[in-house]
Image (cartoon, each protein chain N blue to C red):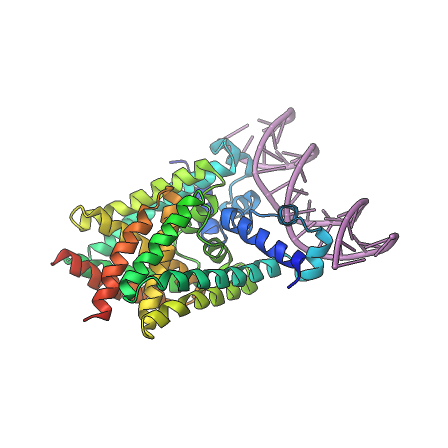
Length: 183
Length: 183
DNA sequence: GTCTATACGGTGATAGAC
DNA sequence: GTCTATCACCGTATAGAC
């Protein structure tokens, strides 16, 4: 894949994650990516919306890998989820509460504002739900519940500048998943 | 309380809820509030940030009332939480997925961008956590967990344009709370 | 493919009359 | 207290040379 294009996507992901979609200007993305403005509209002819949509899907693919990795830490689904959440907590803290994925902010900003962006975010969340569902033996309901709690805990951890919400969620999700999976 | 000031706050809350903080212009707020631009800087001398911070706290107070009302539906904490979540699901659906409170979007947008706004969002979430904690007999951990899951479920419901995530969360939170409260 | 220059609208914010 | 006029700036997007 082309490097200039990829650099733009990665810079956009970082900035959208930190400050959101609307607070981020194309100039800022260009500056941080090192690529020229001319290239942006060459690779993304539909402009900022397209950059946003592709960023959402690309970063979801990244997250899927991290989720898979986190979940592989234990055979037991409950413990696996706990480890995943604890890993996220560390990542969020280590980043100075910038991390947590660009999706949450972009998703919240785009619900009724941009259909293209909203659709991309919807797909992105579906992608992230898949590995959870797999770990839970096809239990869609559990996967969706865990995803909701993780997203909420990431939000509150970032707002409170403390990984506590995520660590709390880790413990409770473990026991809930174990309860549902080992009746 | 002054009416022009209050009108501005309510218009801002509606707009921030629908499209976020940065996507909303002061002109738009003024237009919808019916108040003049001169008044905005008279009542909010610190400009947009102050409007945002006060909007967050005001709408948190609104939410506290709705949470209290929802939780009063049952003596049993688990059932009360379930009813609360189902009520939110209905509200979100009825609003065409605009509802869910201005806090989520503003909180996500402001984590590292504006200290004033971030602090207000932190306080706002603390306010909303209080009635849950009370219902759970002082169990801070449970209140925080429920709040995380509800926020995450609101986000996913809005993104997916479906109340399913919230209804799913309602059922699962009920059984989890019952498990923890009635050992 | 890359770069510069630029168009044009909207942004938050201020000044000063009333 | 309210309103208008206006500021300087930044946003996205485009045109056209190279």
